Image (cartoon, rainbow, N blue to C red; front, side, top):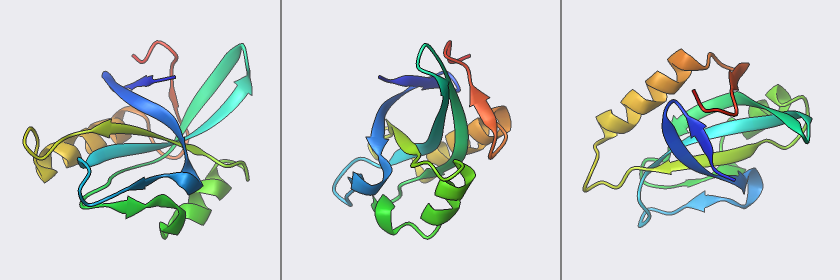
Length: 116
C-alpha cells in the first residue's frame, strides 16, 4: 500500500531490516513509519525522514536502534519516494525532507490516511 506524504505518493511499506538502496539505484527520500492503531483505523506516525544519497543499507543505519525505540519497540517500516538524478538534485531531495519534517514534526507527526 502506498502512502501519500506531503502530497507525494511514497512506495511501501518496505521492511527496515531487509531494504537496501544501492548506489546504482535512483536516490530516494525515505520516511520511517511506525504503524499503530487498529487494522481498520491505522495511524501512520513519522519516526524519521532522510534521503538515501548514493546508497544505504537500512539494517546498518546508525540511527536504526533509535527508530525502533521511537516506534515503541516495534519494527518500523520504510516508505520511499524515488527522485532520479536526471530529474532532481540533492537540494531537491533535501527540500522534500525539510517539507516533510515541517509538516509532520518528528518523532510523532501523524500522516492522515487522506495524505493531506
